[in-house]
Image (tube, rainbow, N blue to C red; front, side, top):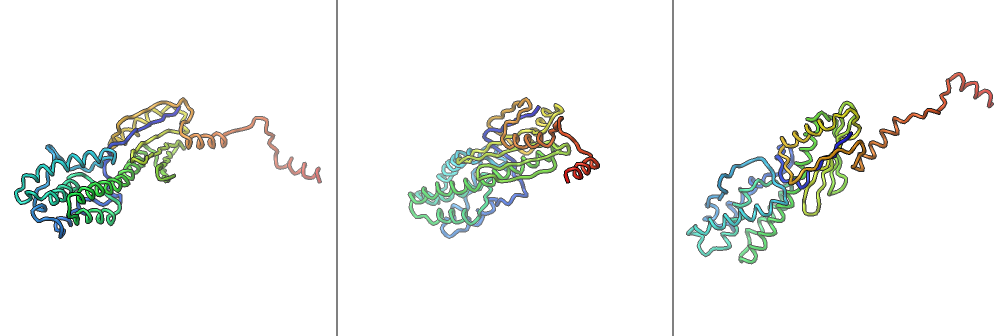
Length: 285
């Protein structure tokens, strides 16, 4: 028996401190004193949603856009009540943007790219320019965040495999949209996981056990799933099904094919003893 396990559209994962991502909240502290940033705006308190609690959970880029838009609208509304910003729509856009990015738990990979994008926003002088650069900045940060998010998902899958008893782990980026993680335990059983990312940054995880024969596949997958949950993996949908001993994933099929080839024994194969081999050699010559 074997099991095929799918997490469709991963929504959340816990941030992994060891990753190389840069916290955008730390990066943004420099913009409170930026020359083009109004003093009154920099002194305005950050607006956080009711019941807001800062966490280490990263949100998928698929859901990030709507979260940023909602937070930005809330900040704009709050800034409308600031007397010193009355009739200063450009200043309010800039202030609300910075406050929004500080509110969300965002992590980026390329600090220079994001810094440049925010600087362009801060230097705008018309509402049209500010609005366009705001959209561009949110897109840039979203793409950067998506890279770190996918890395955190990969790290969670590796860690979950190790915690499940599959301590030999190898990982490879097959192409920009596919990362494959193969974890092997002491019995030679393989836990194969593939992380798929499409052009819209939708992330799926597909996992399968290969080489298992003792019927423990269900128990192993349950433990693996629990370890993923402990690492903050939440998906829109989860699919889990037995394969009946026939691998579904192409990579699992290849591994299983190699395993069966190595184990194959031909009953009609003649085994020649060394002394008989010498006699045959002498006869031929």
